[in-house]
Amino acid sequence: MPAERLLPTQEAEDLIALVKEIARDELKPHAADAEENEKFPREAFRLLGRSGLLGLPYPEEFGGGEQPYEVYLQALEEVASAWMTVAVGLSVHVMSCYGLATFGTREQQDRWLPEMLEGELLGGYALSEVQAGSDPAAMSTRAVRQGDEYVVNGTKAWITHAGAADFYTLMARTSPDAGRGISCFLAPGETEGLTAATPERKMGLTGSITAQLQFDDVRFGTDRLIGNEGDGLKIALSALDSGRLGIAACAVGLAQAALDEAVAYAKTRTQFGRPIIEFQGLEFLLADMAAAVESARATYLQAARRRDRGLPFRQQASIAKLIATDAAMKVTTDAVQVLGGAGYTRDFPVERYMREAKVLQIFEGTNQIQRLVIGRGLR
Amino acid sequence: MNIVVLVKQVPDTWSERKLTDADHTLDRESADAVLDEINERAVEEALQLQEAHGGEVTVIAMGPDRATDAIRKALSMGADKAIHVSDEALHGSDVLATAKVLAKAIGTVENVDLVIAGNEATDGRAGAVPAILAELLGLPQVTQLRKVTVEGTTIKGERETDEGVAFLEASLPAVVSVTEKINEPRYPSFKGIMAAKKKPVSTVTVADLGIDASEVGLSGAYTQVLEAAPKPPRSAGQRVEDGGDGGSKIAEFLVGQKLI
View (cartoon, one colour):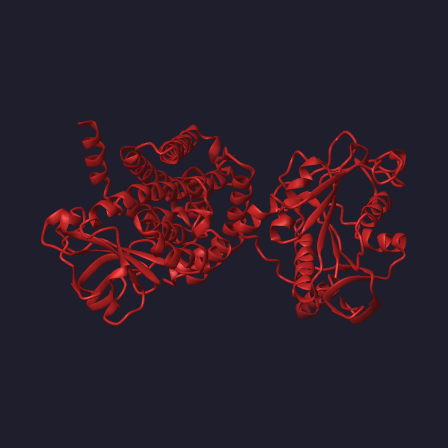
């Protein structure tokens, strides 16, 4: 049973119908092959761009869809149910637009935002480094001001779309002052001195590119500084609050896809003369999976509704990310169990779903970091 | 060039479709309703002709209230306005009544140069409405086309059949129907969805069109479905024993199925 959604408006209903159609006809049929052969689906993102789906939660005046997070995240969830690499890429793109959209000047927004929101450009988010993962304040990539330019040197790590993105939201150090010495920049995707390393060989999301991004005397204008010098970490953490809601939605979409596969299989597979869904051992497993999917969806939607109403939502976003990604890990693992030996083969998608679920517990703040954020909110 | 596109809301071919037990009409509640795939192509063709020749694209649909979803889809693809003929009296209408109603509805649109329809809907599959409609309107019919071009006041079309391709020509105004080979329909964009909300849709009844309710619907239909049964499950298939002539037997089978 596909997810049944309660959407706030007719336009949201039509939006979700469009996303489901694109997901069913243009994304899902290509997912298994592209993941198996590690082919990055750049064209799929162009289709999303042409369809107006790359800027859904941003203002209409800059080419966005002006949709509440409650709606954007459910669109994202539908993409995730069809093809996780595309959903994660979409979520990263939306997060990469956040700094400029939220902290940029009007002039910067007029100049760069429309092509990021309504064009076919794809973004990347360059925060982590090899020695600065959970502790981003430990980063060492430097941006040194020289006249009306910044000169950037250093290496970013685990960058989604590294080498394929048209722009990066980059965090780099402008002073030695740990957390307060980091600044946010809108860096161009192709420029002298900027190179991407060979992509990481990952367990899942093999169609998506993840690589180190090396800055070797990369120069760009000081007009690409977002906010003030020293605002970088604040912007990064604020972007992550929203980005984590995106990952929670991706996790629920993946879990829903795994549940749908498992239920469909359990209805047709017969043993001892009966469909295996009629055995309580399996039925209860599927019931727990359905409960995990529904409760995770409710959790991220509640956090999204707080965001849409302008209420603080950092703690709720971390709870949603934690709950939804743990649910996705459990549900995809159990989906393999329901399909048995078949589920362990690459002839069925559930083993891939299980591999794709694992990284959700790791990126955009490990689930241990989510507990740290949640815990701090309790103090 | 002003174009009218006829669209129909049908049960999604991805869902299970059935007839009601009560009167053997389509059970609209049992399946998701969507804009028929062939109509998406008809709308696409209208939009391409509009892009080349200008003018306005009007969508006309006959169907229950929820056919507004199919209409909105056509508008979000880019059509300019719509007429929705919605009337409970229309329930169970046959192809003759449907064509009569559509002809009247087309008559309310000014300066129509071209009417585009799909060749057949995925639900009823009569495939007769475009031809009947052309007769009622007194317009040339150029049906079952895989390609359409307009030059001045002439419309040219290619009709592909099992026997070959026919090249057809008529003067405008005309009625054309298109097949699934005509084009690949565009997806609406989210901007198109937002714009569709503001486009005019006029909803009319059969009385508004000057038609007596007794002429349409189940009671006015010339034919009647007396009985309906679900399709039997697929049979086991045909087994060919190869006694040296297996190859030709398979070839005979394929020829019989018109596959070669």
